[in-house]
Image 1 (cartoon, helix red, strand yellow):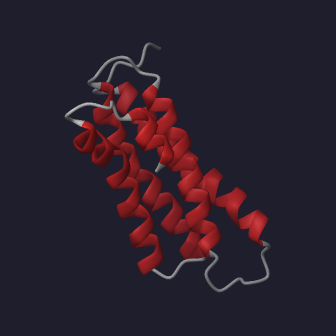
Image 2: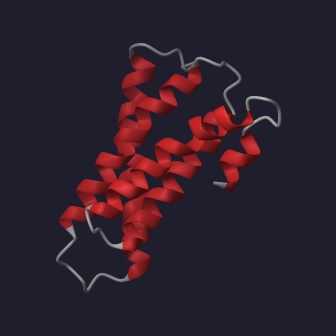
Length: 125
């Protein structure tokens, strides 16, 4: 939430921009919570999605933000699949679950980002 506040310009469009940055992530967190996944999975997904938000803030092209809307569901699906696969394994430590959740969420985001950059979005490579 802090990153979304810092990125949103402090003008008449603050609320619109803040909601554009933060609302997709909030929906992901709520859906992961509704699925009753471990809080460590939600924490890992939150870290990965925040890092991706910071990464997208470095793009100066306004059209790049459309890609952000496409990668958020990918992060959700990756975190959900990992969370559901370990739901019954309570012996895995909290730290390991957070790190694995970050990893799987970033892999999911990376796959969709690669597809976006290879097809509809110019990413400079």
